[in-house]
Image (cartoon, helix red, strand yellow):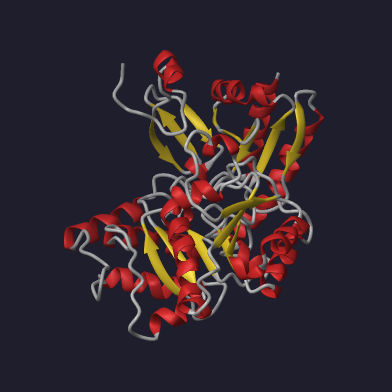
Length: 407
C-alpha cells in the first residue's frame, strides 16, 4: 500500500488499481511514468494556461529563490517582486483602483473574501450583514467558508454545519436570489459569491443575461458581489483577462488563483474594489487575516513570468479563438447516443455531458487509452479546458479521441 492520500479520491479504488502518475509535461501534452504521451484536456486542474514546461518561468523562480525565497507580507513587510506583482495586477483589475491581497491558492482566496465581506459591513456600521450566499452546483474551494458556500452536495456531506449564516440559491435563476433577499431581508446579506462559469459542478455556462441580472440585484440591495474567478481568471474566459471584464460585472471582490501562475507555484489573490478597501486603508483598522505564504516571493516571480508570456504571445486572444474551435470540433459529439449534450461556446471551456452520469469515471480511463488525460466533473461531465497554446490540430485530435473513447 502506498502512503499518499489523494484528494477527491476513493482510496480503496486507487489502492486497487494504482495511481496515474504524470511524470512530465510540454505544451499541451503530458507523459506518464512509462513514457506514454497524452493530450492534456484539462490543463492540469484548469490552471496551466501557458502550457507545460515553460523554462522561462522556472528560471525566474530559480533566480528569485537564490536571492530571497520568501520572508513575510505581514505588517509592513514585503519583497520587491511581490510589490511589483500587486501593481501589475491592479492595472489589469476589472475595477480601477483595486487593492490586491495575496493568498496561497483559490480556497484561501474564497475564505479571505468571505471574512473580508463580513468585516467590511462591521466596519461600515452594519454588523448584521453576515449572511454569505452561494449557488447550487457551485464550487468555491474546500476550506470552511468555501465548502459551506458550495452547492455540490457530496462535498458538504458528513461535516455538519460548517459556517453559520451561509445559504445556497439556484445556479441559473436570478429570481432565486431575489426570493432569498425577500425572505431574510437585504440587511442580513453580506455577499453573493458567483462563478461566471460553473466549473467543478459540471461546467455549465451562464444563461443569457443571468450574470447581469444577479449583479444588478446585488447593487439594488447593497449586497457585495464576489466574482469567483479562480477558474476563469487570467484569460480562461476568452478575449479578456477576467470574465468580470467581459461581462461588465464590476465586482466588489474577486477571487483568483490557478491561472495567476499557470500552476507553476501555488498562489492566489483577492482583488478588493476601492469601496471595500477604503475602511481598511483609512487608518487604525486591522484586518487580522493573512497566510504565511501569501505573496510568496518565488510564487510572485512565477506569476510575473507567466503574465509576461500571456501578454507577449497574445494568449488571451488565443483563448478567445479556442471558444469557436472547441465548439466546432466537440459539438458533433452531441449526436452520440451516450452523450446528453455538449456545452461550449464561451472561452477555453467545454464539457461533454454523458447521458448516464455513472459513465464518467470509466470514460476518463477510456480517454487515457486513446491518448487523452481528462477528468469527470459534476454528474458525468467530461471537462475540456486545455492550455491556451493548444493548436487547432491538437483540438481536432482530442475531439477524435473523445469519439473513439465513446465507441
